[in-house]
Image (cartoon, rainbow, N blue to C red; front, side, top):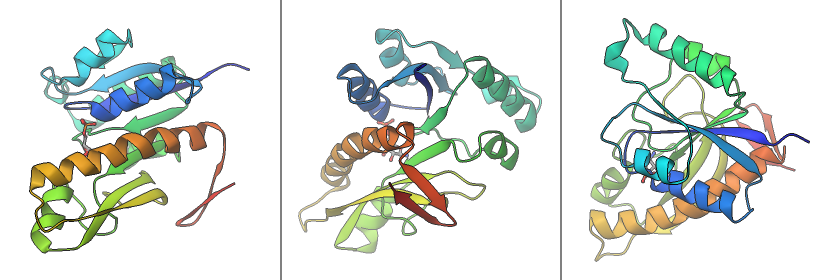
Length: 202
Ligand code: GRF
């Protein structure tokens, strides 16, 4: 059987990209990381992809006349690479309904809080400032709304009274690096069955 192709989308550090690369190298994920899509020429994720010899599509949105033109170009590239799974790993752009429909139920995202709490780009800080005692990590399918699609995996992280944003982020990231490869493996093994908002692991 042909190996499935993964595309990882990242805009920044790329530690989740690295976790997926490591899981693939270990044989835990049996798929090819066929492409890194990046929108930021300064992203450290680019060095990680280079190091792992992963092809890169570096597309700056400002070079396109519209969001649609940008996403049409992306879709074309992803089809060319025969991508089966899109893994958003700190990709700081919202994808339009056009893009989401083009890869229906094939896009997953990781969020550093227990959705539906603390949506948005500051999930760790927002949870800490709100004073919750428990936060965590969510991996979910991507739909048309932000941080909204059906939930695949969640793992809680207890907040300590001594926590700073930095110390909490370190524990959140450690959980992310464990459960994101796990979610990829479940998807690639066809073990995720979506029914409405619920995802059954079979
Ligand atoms: C992670 O915390 C993830 O939950 C959020 O963006 C961050 C990306 O980190 N969506 P990295 O670039 O993978 O290190």
